[in-house]
Picture 1: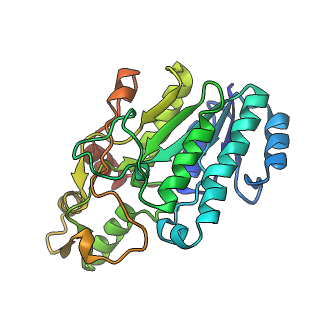
Picture 2: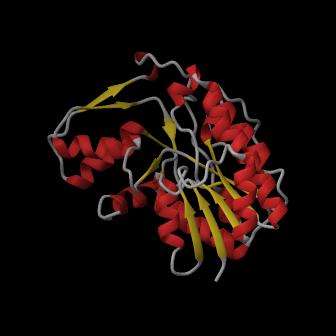
Length: 281
């Protein structure tokens, strides 16, 4: 069995990934309480002791708004912690798999971003994640999988999960009409990650999202249709109508064509949302 270390195991993606890999692989899943990733010495000792073949980092500081006021917290978790894991994985001869974000782009492309597009983060969070990518890729053979707008898994706290919960409660739902995204089901990320481990395509950056750009309004309308919630109250809003500290890319859909060319096909977002509504995570 392949030895795998999963960090950030208490989060939405980490817990899903650890559960997905368990049974077929020898998985050690560590939470922040069990391994503080900003402690480089502790990280080096843990990876050296466990000798995993893969180090999969699911830990991240994802509070985009708070990062504007506390950029050092975002940099510590999203960049320096990744640097520590990168060095430790290299020393142990392990392959590092790290997850990036669409927020490294400025949203001006007007079409799904590809891996070779130039990053231009608009926020402290986006900058911290971009630095994390650079640190991850310092490890030979490393992979960075850029994901976006995660949903499913536990804890279910993503924007899409909140939309589903509000519709089911019969509450009005405010949804953006002008932000174009490619949402990603955490179970599909886990499956794609396992395929990548098995096939080992050329190392580097891959976009790992459900297929097809869409808007939050279209997602909400699809959820309403699937739930049969004909009385749902969807309130369309524009990004300019909401005051936020952190600037966000308006168009941030990602193209996963490179991942598909590597033999890993991602389901459509419609298929993923359908499964999410019928899956007991």
